[in-house]
Image 1: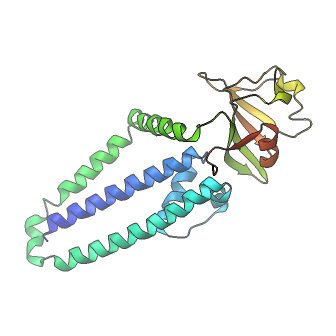
Image 2 (image 1 turned 135 degrees about the vertical axis):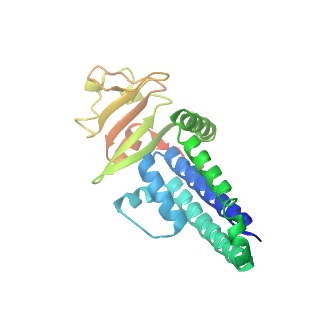
Image 3 (image 1 turned 90 degrees about the horizontal axis):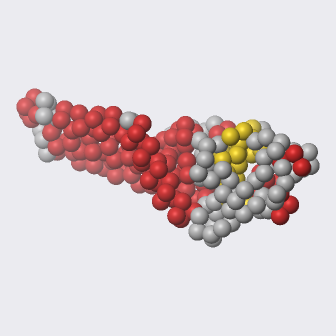
Amino acid sequence: MNIYLAFTLFALIILGYWVISELFAMLFRFTGLPDDKARFQVISLLTGCGFTTHESELLLSTRSRRRLTRITMLFGYVFNITIVSAFINVFFSLKISELAADLISSLIPLLVILVIFLFIRVPSVRAWGDRFFEKLAGRIAHRDTANTILPMDYIGKETIAQVTLREVPADLRDKPLSASGLKTEKNILVMLVEPLGKKAEPATAQTVFQPGDKLTVFGDYATISQVFQARERFGDQ
């Protein structure tokens, strides 16, 4: 195998690794994990470096994330073994005399990788990809009319979560937020309300929940789930 083919293989591996990390990061984002944390944790899982922070606890917070974490770890392990085996075979088959003649040609696949990377970084392209996968995940995740909850982050023992109301619970129906008792009785703070098809806005005392609303709330995870009668979006069925 000449140096050109070796660098082509190297470029394809880089591209494959990058695409895989992007896909897994996107899957974690669909479970409510913030983008920057999803990317960092996916790289840690795929490479097997074992780097952990308090943010890694987010991966164990729900059954769906634990399941996805196991898949990512196993996939990364198998993929890394495949890469090592491929490179051993490649470099043992190279001939030193071919290095100079194929050096310029070897830059082509690397330039292709660079162009693809820059293209994907274009905001409009990235936004299109996010919308596509979100729509695909939505078809799987929203199979029924149950209210759903997605943990997004943790501050101490409290959770920032997004609650999607397919149906407003009876205790909260037709009541303004000030009369709901969420803050005074349940210690749940409703920060943002995103009506169906509209932009998210800060919640006010006069806010009345409607079916289709997406709420960004802060409080105890179990209490939030109970009050809004919500279950994990990617929980076991």
